Image (cartoon, rainbow, N blue to C red; front, side, top):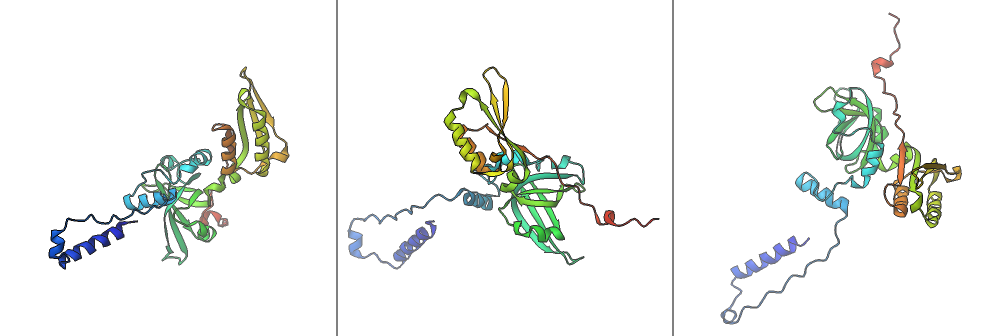
Length: 278
């Protein structure tokens, strides 16, 4: 933030010397210290801005990763990642999450229809998402560098690096509400206080929804008791709900049971054609 001021000050000083600003009397006087330039007091960059600048300058992140706040979410709801993607059979459907690193859009020379190629990065590497035809119009608003997404799509393993043809794209933070079947809250009975359970009731009531909540209590003798809460306290899962539970009880209490089911693989044009009878 101070580079321009410092350079300008240095240029002024050099020009003064060239013009011979110092007189005979100046030479006889003791040198006076220059007026120090007061440092600008600026706030730290937000984490996302700092990380984006690191990636732009160096090509990699240094002080963290933009996906750090979503580590647990990715581990819970992803079915694979870019490191394991090459091991999947071709034309299989999978689900993984990441951050959009680059977007390339254009029109096909052959059909004249729009296309988009997204580069999606996770903690292990990157994969290209090839959006064609209807998927371009359906998901265009998500084609934004820096956007965190989940992609459900068909794996194209015919080249050196697998690619994905998306069937669904949605923001990463919406995954808990879309993909959670149940919420389990796991407690040790000797460590839970009545006040905490009252606070939990208020927290759960503040996130109403349709996903059932189960309380799992481990007794001192090792036995486990499950309690299904009244459906009046079913919830809409979210990062905010998870963070609220962890603020009350610490990490390791909140567990989401994800939905492993995926949409069917889309049929190709020739597979959709009616049989000719021959």
